Image (cartoon, rainbow, N blue to C red; front, side, top):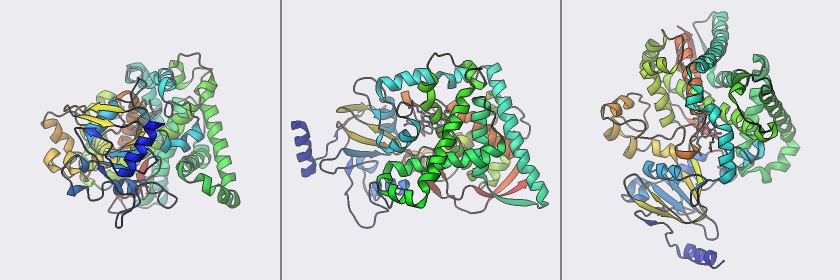
Length: 494
Ligand code: HEM
């Protein structure tokens, strides 16, 4: 109790609570001229990137550690630390886990996700429950499991068949119009392919294209959209939702989500899809929340990733032509072929850097915590601090990714920067963009996701040439980021 009173007084007096080899600078609660208030509320929660922009407003005027590390202190509430410094992000991610004194994943910004998927999932759980869920659910997705040659080929073939079939439908549609090109928003098409790969190929389900397109993708998108709203605005908006009929639509969407989860689990008894590899006596009920997270989370993240990749390529005709040169002879998307397709690999890497699906990674200190960066700086973060690892701004900051570092401005889409870095002898292990996270809570679906997105982007560029309708790619952000225009392109057959 005395500790809390002392902290309250220190907050009132404006004492900087951080210590060691840094001094994050304080962001005032109110100030004119900034993009937004530095916290989510009913009128800005749909624009989380603007809230993060606010933290780094006028940061270029600072030369010390406050340039990349900022905090909010409101007396009586936990501190909020926002960092866009890769060395700090890496140190925090490495020290996240279930050991005493390590960071938890902060569950405050994902309360809506937990209400829709369950609190015991690998994504939401902390401490021993997280460890148990990781041991249960993560091995099936590991590189060593997924990339065993015979297993890999089986998946690659079914994935490829799905992608080629869907793209053929699009091609036939284009031919049927008799026009040279057709204007289309790619994101909904990508979402259908991604969900089909997950449910039918991965979990051994058998849902038709029409049902995926008309029933399941819209239902999941509604649930995912509601997760953000539910985190911030629901208690205030619930009565309005009831009157407007939104609640009824949402209930229907949740019922569809549940039936999709049932379909995914049904394959377990007969060992369909990847279930054949899953050796555990855990009950279906114990797995249910993880399956929901895999369905909604993987759909959202892979759709974001592939939409951004095509959105960037649609604005970079020369890069698109280079990728086409590489993939026109590729029929099988195995690790060796992908290794040869250097431009495609760099396009995927650059996409995750410039437009990461998960734009911030939330952490929480349960106790007073010291971290150490790779260059030996020791940094103190007090107990009960929300730590926001702002990957979006870290990856767009010229100090870390600009022309002086890798030959191109940080905000430009430039897959060539990865050649420059390789020539400098710097590997992707050393210079991190955190697109799949890092450390103990790194994404378990990384290799599956890379396989799916590599396949979709490669197969797409092989068949079509696309040109963006709008010159600039704006971003919208919710659970993940997506191109604001739904990846609206003019599509031409090659
Ligand atoms: C290809 C697109 C994907 C991207 C960009 C992506 C990104 C990420 C990131 C950045 C994290 C770390 C979050 C954090 O540290 O707070 C994460 C965690 C996670 N991802 Fe992915 N992901 C993708 C695909 C998938 C797939 C396909 C699955 C499952 C089928 C999946 C399941 C998960 C789970 C369960 C976690 C939580 C892990 C834990 O906390 O231990 N992701 N993902």
